[in-house]
Image 1 (spheres, helix red, strand yellow):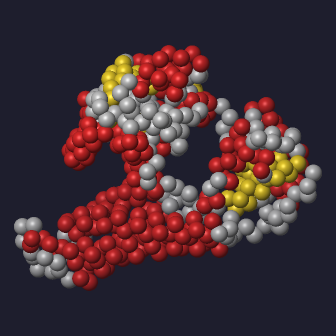
Image 2: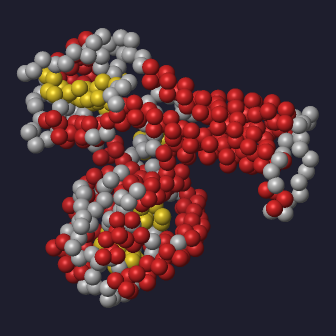
Image 3: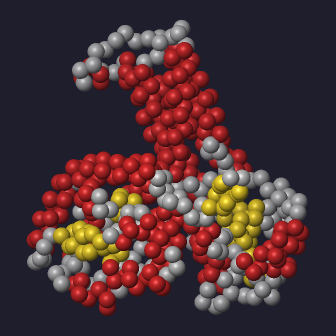
Length: 485
């Protein structure tokens, strides 16, 4: 066995990047908030914009009062961001999560500021300025953080300020951890190698990493080397050995992160509830309450109606192109299974030659580069434009904007007995896009993995979660990585 790499002392782990990036984020937020405040003041009182839209121009209040007010706002909002732990190093959040967090903090900050302004009688602040400030602050803070985030990722790609990690385990869980991290150097984690009772199979992605020894040697290696993160990818039967490793590493300043190995742990929100002083662990709950269903349905109706109006010119253009490209109907219709096993007709723009559906069984499920596609169909699939008619399914209530993707009847009949917990995905309405799809599990991918993500969504639904998935879907569509289903 090769000698394990020496990483140096396990003390003094602070890297300049862990100080620099939070500092740049605070600086970026401060500049964005202050500039947004001053720009909102100028737009309301100095520009001619409000005259052109029919609102009367009023005398400009002293700028000094707004500058003083802006300093208060900067302090309050920075404290709110810090309370939400948005100045931590190595946050590795998606742009959708970051945008939603910014909207939440800025909206809460506006409520605080407007409450203070209401009781502060020595100076009268414009409500229009506050409205403009809310919008421009969100845009400015998000833009600034995106720049800082891109800078941070560039440092990691160059091999600077990396965290050193090891993996405990060598089976499928360990392979997934290594494949994800090794393929994305911008995460800022360098996997040195793995400890397991044997080497990984030659065809395993983990075989490209260095085998550092068996599990009994892991604790000593962690104590004597600069290991920042220990990824634990062990099965339940090995957990007693894991406890020994953690106990031996007492006092060592390293993170231990466990990958769950049970579907129930991955997909359930286990909660403790009490009935007549008897504690119960709730391992499965109803995904949507009455108010949750109402909020989700209202959101679906409003957004689908707006999108149908916005995309109406595109829908007409695609209709014409399909008719010019090949013979057959404009829309492809197919019976799919929705919530509670209810069947419905799903609409898509036709992207294949007429009659191609009779070869579905031989072609497979969601295959790439399907030769049956028409010329315009290749473009429609790549950009996911072929899915736009499903906005009508959403509007009339057959589907939701976000949810597990609807499957064909025969696939549901085959998979419900072959895949554990498959039917649990039908506890909610199926969607145009879903948590599995935005995580790369689309088309001809593992059904079991897709089910895990679908069930996680069902058990963890929230309106903010839906918005996050829609933002990530829009980003994928704009980048040309569509969703096949």
